[in-house]
Structures are given as structure tokens and as C-alpha cells.
Length: 45
Image (cartoon, rainbow, N blue to C red; front, side):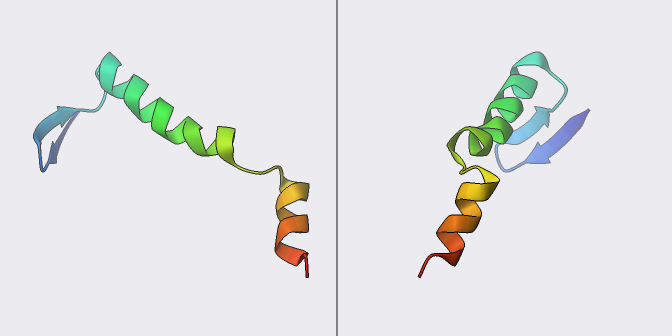
């Protein structure tokens, strides 16, 4: 599948592009807080 971007066409199902997308989507999971820790952080005085 081809996607037009500001840098020209990108093939979003190419192996390299899939790896890049997976790394970007996995990043928040590795740096995010656990659900209970997030709740404690938000509700702290």
C-alpha cells in the first residue's frame, strides 16, 4: 500500500516501514505509567 506524505510516497507495508511504525507505537507503552500509578498521580493532592 502506498501513502503520499510530505516526503514523497511511502510504502506502509514494506518491512522497514512496518518496523519503524511498530517502534513508534510501542514507545508509549514502555515509558507510560501503570494504570494504578497513573490514577495515583492524577488524584494526588
